[in-house]
Length: 525
Picture 1 (tube, rainbow, N blue to C red):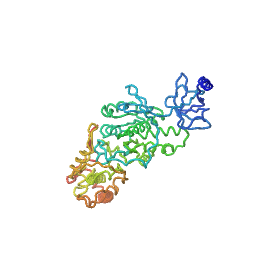
Picture 2: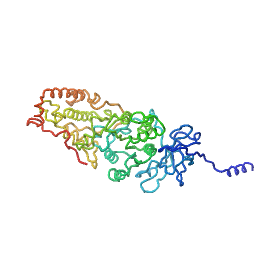
Picture 3: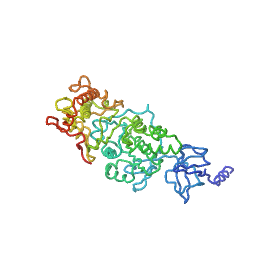
Picture 4: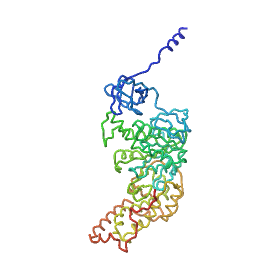
């Protein structure tokens, strides 16, 4: 009787909640007093704005016994004295396979007008830690990405993480859509972070298409949304990838772009009072980047996440802080160059500046021989492109240069690919072998470990064994070739007088008839 009476009295006690008050608003930053003991970094609060609006915020710091909050939406109606209530809910989601084919926002809410999303049985934290390094599987075998230039020259393995580095308007979004449509993966999880709102629907309908969307989940946070939404969209993309990986699927995680994620982190850090460092980026940006990118990779027992992350390089500077930091974290980088796009060759990949760190281990000997031969020809032509363009090089002066000129047009055509065209990996190797007159490599699929490779043109590019049958095995490395070409070009330039250079601008009959390096050899968009 005593116990039941006590329980009855407890039931009559009014439900209590912790409240604070808005003590200041500056820009998007809200200061709340009275809750500093009840909150911690990452806690959620709900501000009761005028007109009954509820504004969800997150704690990003503390100053003078006040909590510093940033909103997930508009601060309209928020003023001094508004109540701020502690929000007990943890930031988790409950995904399920029924989410495939849907488009969601950073909060996991559907925005495609196709109705509500069913919740799965398991809760996943939005900002989970990456799996322990010693518990992960090794990188798996090569995967077919459907893009000829990447399949042959920049092979990607299951569980590998690669970056696509490009300036604005060079074609990275179109390349991303080709990868989403053509790559051999069980599930695609695509994060559009900081994209233009006008282009989202166009990208979904025209570039990704119904076929690509059917096996994808797309997370969208447009450029006009608050920085917390853009940051959370990136973490939600990683969390959804982890869910399908844990189901045993091989997941392709595509994110466009990591740079806008970093910009959102910069806004959050500056609002919290962090000192700006390189180009205004705060120290927390470079601590947060590896936490996101390391979530991709092989799973512990089953499944994998192959990550392809675009990096928008500011001012076409590929050594700017975010690009430099991301390049050091990932397992390879694909460089899209404006000069290549300007000569109308798409995808505008500069192979000589791109590298996959699973090469040469993931290729067999014949494939490595084929790739090295093609790289050497491209490197030779690029080193002499200026003299070839003005007609200063005479045919027969150097057999290696003559060979590079002979194959250059065909190699450029091989690297070109329309966005509606899919290229099979075996087909790509066969076409390249036939182009260069080499034996077609036999396909193989075996698990490899990620091994570091030198930059293109380095000594690690010489992958042919001493007993290789190909006569090219005895040739010097691309780096040695490059030095020889530079010396040869300098001697030729010194030997030409001003009068001879003027005459060379009009190529004489005996000069090689080649297309200039900026000729439109690729396909049109």
